[in-house]
Image (cartoon, rainbow, N blue to C red; front, side, top):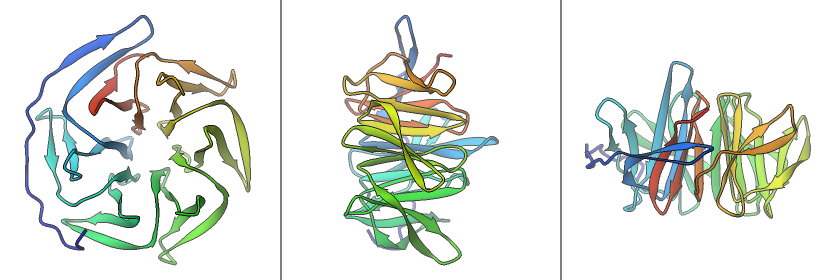
Length: 238
């Protein structure tokens, strides 16, 4: 990825389908995706995907379509300001206006939330971005996947086991997952069977929300977006 990339608008054709079951209702959004992320604050949700061509796209609700922002990436996260961060060939970039800014360090996964950005390095170690020092700082632990909740706390998956950071300790949570994300005071996972689950802290358990997916992203309003067979869906249930 070059450090400067011009934005080329691209509107994708859209088809809307509502699919549901007794537990959930999932709305099929247009386009296809390899990866998905959601961020922003209570004033607005920013949803981004990495398309089949590895370019970054932002969801435009008013046009009900995706707009291309160019670049090349395999992983994506969206911070609390609605700014996307991407990983391409283990290099990290964030969008600054119309320019993709190359950041220090390397990563294989990235996530953001609650004003924090985290990555997983190629050694599986977990790092938090420090903008003042303009560097990544280790928070310990090992992980394959990561999500960050609305309080800026990371939740990770390592060998399908789920952990959340409590101070300086990684707390082992119940259940297993193949994908995880958080937002709006909620945490969601995709289980080994591909089913979607929402964390219930009072019951200290995961509640099934139906559907099937391989990837998940959760906006600041707590609404999850998933990818299944490269198709994008958002949750329209309770």
